[in-house]
Image (spheres, rainbow, N blue to C red):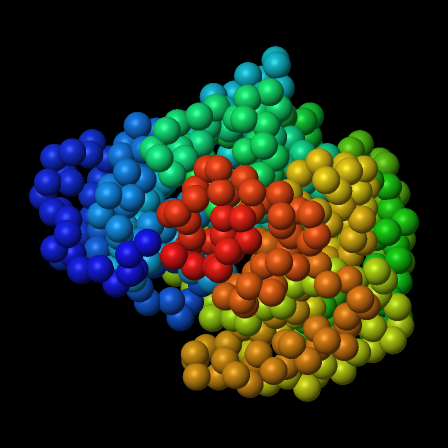
Length: 466
């Protein structure tokens, strides 16, 4: 593989404009800086060209262009990769933005969706039929990236990960071939893309199963974050019916209009609640959480499912350090550790996010997909968001310190929340035989590691990188 710093003389922007019906954006074009900007802040890479293909055939041509020129290839959906994998320095960005077709079969409860769609766009369209597929918790995330990683979100305990609703996909492989993959056709590749990330090709379309999710009982419930409340919240979330998925953000209460001023900056549990079932049953499921303490804010109510996704914040590009992990329990000692560390941090925003899993996620065998953490009980993210890149070392020390104290021996990590953290952490995302199987499949479909701007799995266990 050639260097990612090849110069632009190896390609001709005018010639590419002739060859592609989709948009071709070069460094001298208006909109280039906006087009190369990804969601995470602090990433400033200048690709030689950004190509927004119009269809799968053009995706294949972009892949072939990267293979033939040796220019590094970045594949961009929603641009949320924590490591900035959606953009490259000096290479080609294959930007799926213009591929947003959605073909819903409401009667058959299936849908074909192109991978330029965001989770919010998909959810709004499916919601018009009273149907949904579970993605994450952020509407601006691309459906491609989150599906390839696994997909942990508001419907996880009821309907499993996103990949548990995946029926088929169309994938452009490293040789430029468009293949249909499902349980019968290319079953090894179908297994690999369910959790193995973008290592194996460019997915142009997914076919998903749709679930009946008309209205939910959901929204924000904010409680004071005493150790007792945090530990009890986690226990109640584990004991709750599968219809209820929760995301508990333990953090200083933000200065938002719905938060009483006297609580601004004090430790709080800002919880996102989503009960996918009948309203009366949902109110009963939420009641134990409301009883933990007098809520600082209670915005939980019956709502159409798409409303659970918060509106996008235009121009928001946070600089952050994140550490993802799995833990078995959040007891009083762990909760006290979280509160103590939050108060010690100098980051403008810091959080320990807790997602109780189980339910439908845990009922799938660990080897059924490339997401191998089916029995891990609680996913934790420790994060610090700050303003200046030069502060990174200080905040990374805080993040890794809290994560180390919370560790309970589960070395696994969810690949969607990995940043640029090295090979050992990528291996933690794919423990044991999962890594070996993925490496073997990589060797069959991408032996030269053309698709290496990702949490990379080299062919047959070789060295990571181009």
